[in-house]
Each structure stands twice: as C-alpha cells, then as structure tokens.
Length: 234
Image 1 (spheres, rainbow, N blue to C red):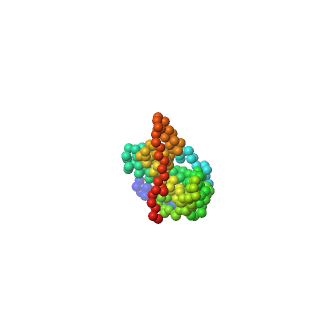
Image 2: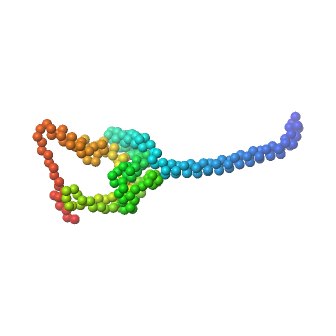
Image 3: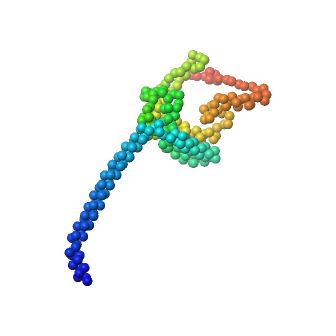
C-alpha cells in the first residue's frame, strides 16, 4: 500500500505542482485585478465627492443641520449652566470641527447677512456654490486673519463719521463659526435684563421690559451719552 502511494505521488507530483502554481497565478491575477478595480473605485469616489461638494450646495439639508447644531448648542448651554467647564470645552471643539456648523457659518455670511456683498481687502464680494463648498473645506481656526478694510460711515443725525472695519469673507465665516460655539456658553451667565446683541431678543423686548417696570408708578429714566465727557489725548 505504501509503495502504491509513493508511485502515485511520483507520477502525479508534477501535475499537482502545476495545478498549485496555476491557482497561485490565478489568485495573484485576481489580486491585481482587485487592486486596479479598487483604485478605479477610489478615484471615482473621490470624483463623486468633489462633484457632491462643489455642485450640490443647494441640495444640502439645511433644516437637519440647523437642528443638529441647535441640539449641540443646547448641550453647551446646559453644561455651562451647571459649571461643567471640561464638557463645555469638549463640546465647543466638537462643534467647531463639525462640517454642518461650518456650512451654516458660510451660508450665514455669504447668503443671509445684510453685508453679504461687502468686500474686504481682497476685493471678494460674493461666492458661487462651488466657492462656498471650497470655503467650507478650507475653514480652519489656525489660519492667520487678514487685515480689515477701514470704511468711514456717517453717524445718524450728525456730520461726524465713525470707523468701521470690514474683514474678508473667510474671516467672517470663522467669526460666525466661533460665535456659534461661544454664544450658548455665555448665554447661561448673562443678565436676564440685557437685550443688546442677544439671540432671540430685540429692542422691542427692552421696550416691553421698561413698560412693565414703570407702569405701576412714576419713575425716573436717565438717558446719558458719556462719550464726549471722556478726555481724549490722542
């Protein structure tokens, strides 16, 4: 029995080696084909991602992004209210790295604000959807801010003018992104009767608060502008 097995192995050994080498070659060729196919898929996926980020700005689900941003800001507000500074900073870093928050910041600066077509020192007034998507991808807090463009605008009811610094669109988008992260933290500590530059509040709320305070009886109201009382040596 042992001799018959040995003879069979000697007679069919070359065929076994040939079949094994053929299987190995098939596996190598299949691996090469998969590698080439994988490269083609990755290049196609990259092209599709670029196409998606550059030409589908108007198809972004803004309501969904705004809801997610609001939930994250609500978590920051709650953590700041209970004094959990570590959680506040962690959530703020998460927000500022969020793609959705960056998209909302760019949209707010380039499409919603009244000064959306105001140029900075670089002369850029408006961005198309492709440029907005590129700005979202390149939006970083580590980049150095550019100088502001100084414009003198007239004061109301007077001949005097006041200076106004206008940043470039990129810096304005960064400011909007940082504002969305810092605002809920400090809203938890602001006074309840302050109405200047507060989200969800306006001068009508201040008028209503004043009316509720003085409607019960006679009150004194002091309105003073102390800017001209301060000595200016420069």
